[in-house]
Structure formats: structure tokens, C-alpha cells
Image (tube, rainbow, N blue to C red):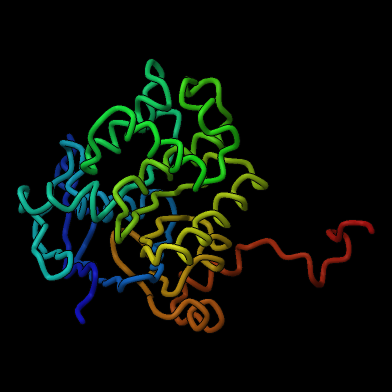
Amino acid sequence: MGNLLRVDELQIELITAGGVVRAVDGVSFCIDAGETVTIIGESGSGKSTTAMGVLGLLPTDLAVLSGHASFKDCDILGNSAALAKVRGRHIALIPQDPMTALSPVHTIGSQLRDAIRHSGVTGRAAQRDRAVELLEQVRIPRATEQLGKYPHQLSGGMLQRVLIAAALAAGPELIVADEPTSALDVTVQASILDLLLELQERTGVAILMITHDLGVARLMSDRIFVMKQGRFVEGGNADELLGNAQSPYTKRLLDAVPRLDGHPELEVPA
């Protein structure tokens, strides 16, 4: 069986007033069914640009220069017709910031129905039932009541769960999670990551995780690719990479993670 998603030699250019910058410079990776692959790097390294390039969601100042991307052996890079059949159905996106991803003037129910309608469910009653089911899947209490609320009436963690529910609407085979916890506080981050792991175990969905957080990468990943200035500097099995990093950049990232061991002055009193 082939890869679920395969990306080869992807190059993306950023057009600026001062000229053209190579934002993504020849990256290659693959994702198999049911696994989590993480691209990790500092802000501006090109990790989100890589994902958005594959999904055809780049802003106008960014353009795919070359490369190849296929989903289940079907070419989707630069093939708008094929991508339209895949995106939102077989590949779903969890955006980074729910407050900007959701419309402030439409209810949660209305916005979920849009995703559900796109998945092929017709009839207002059926769409409402599906919306309630999705909210219950992501553990939102009093799901029916939440449908009539607006985004400003829910917490950040609840809104992120709404985005996950919308991503699940069509039963995708792959979810692209673009920094899904960066806008949340630490305790809420943990609950969202646990939810993603639970959903993955139950549904078998594959995840492409985009993050700058080594803790997230360590918890979620089967394989990790470390990105710097548009290139992968290292990649491989998560445990092996984190336990025996070869790249000096990866080692610096690991060294930058705060540690309590060996520093009694930093220990939390019992």
C-alpha cells in the first residue's frame, strides 16, 4: 500500500518588496494511514507554509515554485480540481486561532452546518443531528445548547474543540493541525492534545502536526521533521530523534527546553 500523503521536493517562494525569498526549499516527507508526523521549528521556519502549500491555501505573496504532492497516489499540487475533491473531505484542517477561524457573526451551529453540508449531508434536521453528534464527540457539554451560541460566548478551549468537530465532519483520513494549541493556556493545551490522541485511536485518522513546541511533538508524534529556514535539518522516528539528535540545531532546541532536574532552586516545593 502506498503512502496516504507524499510530498517530494516542495519549493515555495515568498515575493517581497526587496525580491524573492525561498520560504520552503526542497522538503520531502510522507504520512501513512493512522500515524502522526510532526514538522517542528521556530517561527518563520516554513512549517505552516509547507502545509498550506500542500493544501493550496497560500496567501497571494507566496507561490509554489516546484515539487510534487499526492494524496493516495493522486496528484494534488497545482491540480485544483483534484484538490477540491480531497480538501475538506479526505484532508481536513484545524487552524491555529479559533477566534480568527470562526465568524463572529454566525452561530456555532450555522458554521458547523456549513462543514457538514460540504461533507454531503442534506436536510436541516439531519445536519443539526450531525452537528450535535460532532460536538459530543469532542466532549463539548450540553451540545444542543451550544449550537445557538456565538464564538465570543465560548472559551478558547471550547472553540478549538468546535474547530476539531468541523474538521471531523466528513470523516477525513488526514487532519492537518496547524499549531492547534498555541493560542491556549497550558492546562487547556493538554486536554486538546489528549482529545486528538483519543480521536486518532478511535477513528484511525492520520495527523500532520505543525508546532514549535517540543513537548507537543514528543507526546503526539510517530515521526518528526525539524525545520530551519525552509529546510528539514533532521527527521526520523520520534523517540530516536529526540533521544539521539544528530543535527546541532536539533540539539540546541532540546537544550533550550527548561529542566528541573539538577537545579534544586527550580524545584517546586512539596
